[in-house]
Image 1 (cartoon, rainbow, N blue to C red):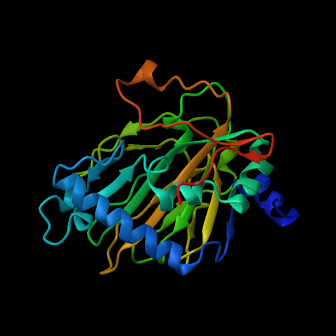
Image 2 (cartoon, rainbow, N blue to C red):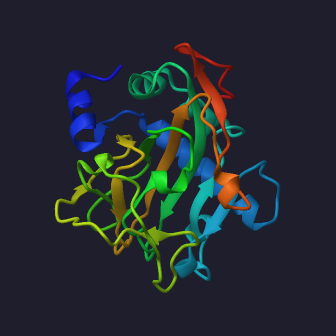
Length: 262
């Protein structure tokens, strides 16, 4: 359950933060496993439904496959450490307080922000979610620290009350596939989200946010899940010829569905 202060922050700002939500060993296990998966994908091995995006600016970088990776999607169903976290009872209780007792986890992505990687322009996640109902809830676990130097998220408090804004394509050199930008809104109220490993950001799907370039020598890594109300109709394939979504039932009538793979 969320506290009154968290509810107030959600209603006013569209997000709240839970410090030290995950233990250090959870963050370590996630980073180790996703690095292994990136190596396997780059080598052409099968990793179930996972989809890896290379960081365009780092495509020819030396080092491991993880050093060249931008994001790894769809790992919440088949990978034990990520499946266990998306079913975490404390986490589901938080999300159920916002969306109700019947929940699906429909999207997962591990985000690498390696040194030299570009940020993502101002956007709303709901732009990518052509569903029959809103809101959706995102949960962002800081696997490593997010600092001003290594490209943290920036949010625009209160913008969750905005409609879905028109966007333009991200035209920067080395822009990631599918990135868009909101350019019709005053973002002077922006604020950075600085996190320590294990901190959890819970945010509204319509909250405007961006990230900045990583100008440091350190990795900024995060594991992100998105939740929706069970029974949501997903119209993604009406507009695109593929989907990153994988709707996994995790809660019904306030009770966990199935068992964690861990």
